[in-house]
Length: 560
Image 1 (cartoon, one colour):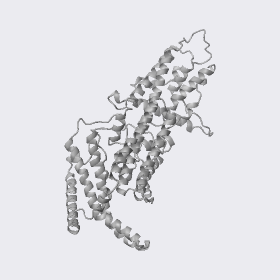
Image 2: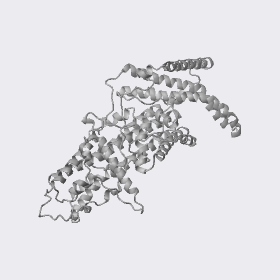
Image 3: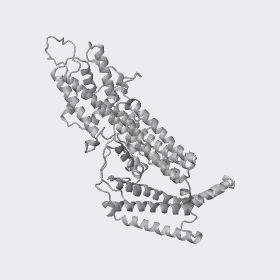
Image 4: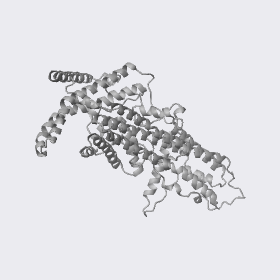
């Protein structure tokens, strides 16, 4: 997992609370419009307006753009294939091949086996391999709890903005406890543990993105339903003329047309326009709250929709101009919300709530992305020869990694264990550590590069081909990075996008922190997850990995 320091427009992570309550949702609004409203009308208006305002969020999901792309080293990438440096890529693998042949020859001469003593493979396969596969399958299947919760939200059994997001976070905590605890109970070797825990973290991020994005859409869908109901009520409202002698004009109307912003009505309603208006409303609310200096908790100002709803609920007569403006405003909001619920999908069958199917959920679980969207760019067919090529490359890289670890890393590690077991004092062992570190630097660097290539070039491209997932920009040219924040963005794009949407900006919106503090929170969360994985593998909490990763914080935030 890689940290991210960029800004976006997301919801939140479990640690930063993706749900944001509006404190003004219980504030009565109808008495402000007319001094002689009935108590019943006031209560109705308060309830309806509170419901609508409760679903308003202080941060929206970023418009991450998924397009048809190939990874940098993929042979289908025309830019990479035509690069003058492409030969160095070929030369690298020729060198690796010769290096592995040399290791195998030496092992054959010394042990009579190209794999040497073969301790690592014995660790990997000597026990619980079937249990590992079954446990991993159960773990993936259990992500369906998020789908069940969203179905309950859709049916109205659970209110996402009240208890729904809490239940989701509780389930995620239980999920993490199971992922971390099961390897401990089974006393798995590090090979089993690292696979299970890392895959568990991937499933956790997928569940979170699926649940909180659909939870947000559920709130929009609920508000849209309420506005449609208000439009229906507007058809039956009593219409009066301004000079109606039967009405006293010493008191103002519940809401005058000049109090409503109508500039946006000339534009085509869309999800983007809807988001921009929400942001403007939120900014106004935060600005007013920031102006309060007496320490009181003042409610955020109402937006135009809240005012219109309150005016309709007041049951006061309206003139023709009011009805016309109210109707236009509400229809614009409904159309914009409809576009928001459709997202980027080109098929209404995938728009919310039609997307809440078992197939859609588990399809997202197997896709090589951590950010949920209603639709992704897809390939027309599967290139089976390409998929086979990536599968062979995957097992080939794993073989190379095992050979390097067996020849250069495992013996050094075992030597440190032997020195400790024979009771050698720490002061004596320190004399050997610099030489051991020198012996490990190059093999570790090779394993680092090969691990990255294994996951982000072979496995993800293999899965993308089988699932017809067309956006394969799993990484950028991190080898050209000149800063830590650029490296954090380019090394691991899927995790970067997740942190961008679900941690960074939600820290700003939920906790009202600035960009630098949000960056600190994002890096700290990422470092904690890395430290957790290290603890699961080695059963020791050192803290130096967290400490060093926090030193990678950028001096300035790049909002890209």
